[in-house]
Structure formats: structure tokens, C-alpha cells
Image (tube, rainbow, N blue to C red; front, side):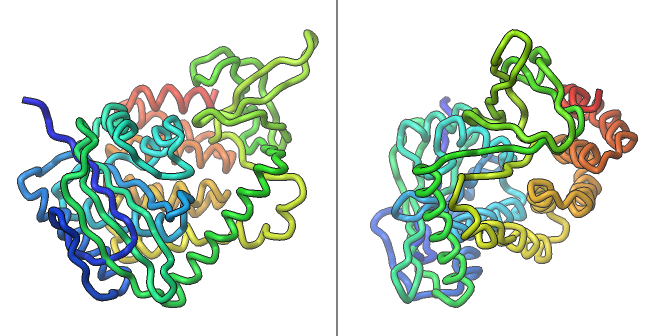
Length: 364
């Protein structure tokens, strides 16, 4: 018997009822209350589907742009559904990689074709995603449940979120990102800086690929394009210009564009993502997935000590958490603590040999 797969699509025009067609509308509600009710309805509707595997995709707006509000809703749903104890949640890093490969990381828009591919590539039984719409006095959200094997919608819900100052702020920040994206398209000049001494440049975008060169800490590299988790770059050699690849965990993006960044740099580098995750961890301090996501956000922002603390707490709660061990090892390398990185690697060899092999590739 074929296994039924679902995609739950939640669009922000909020009414917090999860039902079959037609939609039922309710009054405006506080953001957390609305998300909580949506989580409950999702759980109720899939009451006979215990331990199915699901993934939650951030919600884009009606212009198919990713929003910080949409990210927050996705994170909260992830936490709520995880805490129900009834579902297996796809790791955020794996989901992001798949979304990037399917070119959905910027829009989050799922169609029948991409729904099937997401199901096949992640092995999920359900996906949760949605859209957000600023209606003026409130934010609107729509929800749809889609069978991945057919790509057909078979259930839906909607809700309205009260647009308070916090919600308005999240939407305003998103507008800055949209402006930045427009400027990036007009004047793209991405550069990266090496943040791990002796970072390896590979001949192919593969951790096991042949090492072309090693770059020192602080080296600035120009990027041609990004492929998944790898940056494609060009290097000068005795034989002329050669193409190489460096993994995203070994570098940080130094410049998104040539002339526009200075005017909005402070706004684009705000810590809203971290604030959202810190709020989640504050509410659910024993959630290893939330701690892992917070640690990864710290790591991306070069807050290595805080990253290490969050990742260690995640591992304490979930000792077999392979990705948390791997990321902690990378964090120690950034702190130039090779001894601790090797200790993590030794533990990881017993948990996830494949990840341990990748980590060792950065240590040696």
C-alpha cells in the first residue's frame, strides 16, 4: 500500500481552523495564539498519522519573497509540532539544502511538481508552508494540506493575525531585504572571507573531492556563483586561472553588492533571526532542535562562543544528535580549538561516520 504523503501549506490570512473545504474565517488573534491553534488543528487532523515525518518551510509573502515573519511562523510551528511528540521533524539544514537545490529557498512557493520532489528528496510525509500578506490592520494567512504523491490540495484553513508593533517591524525589515535583493540583481559583486585557517579549495563541490589549494584565515575570495552549500571561485595558478569550490562553513559573505550595502548595512545585519530563536528557546529550553537552530544562527553570525554553548546544550538533551556534534566541531575550529574539535570528531565517529568523515576533512 502506497504511503500517503502530505504537504500542509499555511498562508497568512489567519483564521486558526484546520478543516476541509470550504474555508472558515474567524476574528483577528495574537500571533502566538493563532500559531498555537493552527498547530493543534494540524495535529488533530492527522490524529491517525503518528510518527510521520514532516518538514516546515518558511512562509513567503504574496510577491513570493521570503519574510522574517514567515520565518518566525515556520519556526514556531516546528517547535509546537515537535513538542507534540507525534512527528519526526526534518533537520533544518537538510531542508535548506533541498530547497536550495530546487530553487525554492528564495520564494518558498510549492507547486505539485516541487511537492513530489520535496517528498522524494527528504522522505517526508508532510510539508508545512504558507504565505503572508500585509492587509493593513492585520496580516492574512492561508493554509492548505496537499498530498505529495498527487500534488492535490485536500484540506485548508485560514486566520488573521493582529498587526501590532512587533509584526509591523518584522514586515518593515522584510521590505529592506526586498530592496536589497533588487539592488543585488542590478549590481552583484559577492565576496567571501575565509574564517577557518587552512580552508581547503576543492576541484569539485564535494567534501571528498581533490584538494586544489588551501587558503589562510582572512583570505578574501571573489565568488562566481553559489551551488548548494558550495561557493564557486576562480584562483590563479602556474597554469593560469582555475576553478575551485569552497564550503560555506569555511567562509562568511563579506559583500553582497558593490555600492548599496553601506546605506542599509545596519538594517540587513539586524539580529531578528537570533531574537526569534532566542524567544523560542526561552519558551522551550529543553527543545534540542530549537537549540541547534539557535547555535547555527550564532555560528553564521560569527558568535562562536554562544554557538558552542547552544550546541552543547542541544547535545546534552539529545546525545545522538549528529548534526549538532558536527556543527560544534566546526564551531571549535573557528575558535581555533583543534583539541576540542578532535574530541567532538571522536564522538561523532560512533554516531554518524559520514558526518565524522566530513568533519575530519576540515580538521586535518
